[in-house]
Image 1 (cartoon, rainbow, N blue to C red):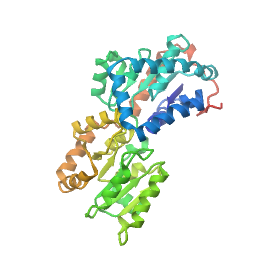
Image 2 (image 1 turned 90 degrees about the horizontal axis):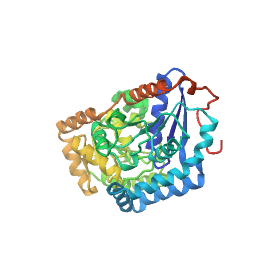
Image 3 (image 1 turned 120 degrees about the horizontal axis):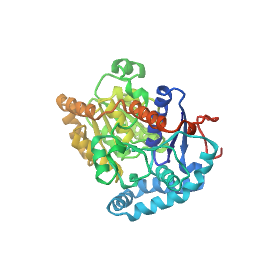
Image 4 (image 1 turned 120 degrees about the vertical axis):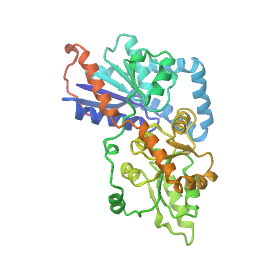
Amino acid sequence: MNILYMTADTGGGHVKAAQALMHQSEKQIPGCKSMLVDSLKFISPAINKIITGTYHKTIKSAPFLYGKLYDLSEDGDFITDIAKAFNGLLSGRLNKLFMQYRFDAAVCAHTIPLQMLASLKRRGLLNIPVIGLVTDYAHHSFWNVAEADAFIVAHEDVKKDMVKMGIDEEKVFAFGIPVAEEFLKPGNRYVLLNKMGFKDKPTLLLMGGSLGFGEMLPLFSALISIARDIQIIAVAGHNKKLKYQMENIVNKRNGFNSSNIRIFGYTDKISELMDIADIIITKPGGITVSEALVKNLPIIITRPIPGQEERNARFLTQSGAAVRLHSCSELENILQKMLDRPFTLRRMSKAAGKLARPNASANIARLLEEFVMKAPYSERVNLPFPVAISAKS
């Protein structure tokens, strides 16, 4: 069984979800092979640079504009229709991928490749099951693609929203967002504290996604200014400038005890850091949130990217798993209420556990196998199949 996974480089979460599902499918389904393709990079590195570069600059420099466009695309069909038409024009460039390799199904962890494959299906150029993997706790009109055979969503509430917007209920499966296998294995906090050189005291994990967004610098400054015996772990992700700035803040504070602070760049130890932490402070990206929920970790939500993350924040706060931080000046008061009231932390942890979907990858892999087994055997051909492909292949 050959499964194609498609993403777009608008943040690391889509890729992480696809990779988590890839690994589970290969472990769970006999003979399963996977290929991960960044749709825009495969079509054209130049086009990818324009689209993803514009996205990153907009959410960093003018997030209000992104949020406005997001809302406009929900209020009417004009922007959605333009996006689908544009992706449809690009879809023909994917033909060489399907001519070179035989796939049994495709999973799209982003709306861009989903719309491309939908265009190919409409034109009769593709006849395999195509599944949309929604990596946020909210629906959007860009996912309204009639040609998709199934949609995987984070929660029953998201499924209800999709059905209200006209998607067939039988196509929507509220299995959750896939997370990497290591997040499903609870770590021993005390063993990890000793292993990683941390102290046994209230510990806060500050994150801003793979790009280090979410007002991390002022939040970090506010945290280290709190007159309380706490341990701070800050993860800057791929944002090297942010890591340097945080280190510089600590170094410039004369007489300041920095032994309670650890600053990381990109790290593959997020699961262990979550096991150590009592609270995570983060922007509400779908993957980071899903990882925290699986760990039953109470969440303080920092400034979300307008649009899908704003909806994620609303969902999490209404569910009781998170509290919203509107300004850095509120941070000390919120932490005081959480740390001084163990009941509050236990209640939030319990709410997180109710939202968690630790079996998401296993359930989606089973669904994939069911879809493929329904296809005629003549269409399931084993061809040479690498584990990855790049735009240069």
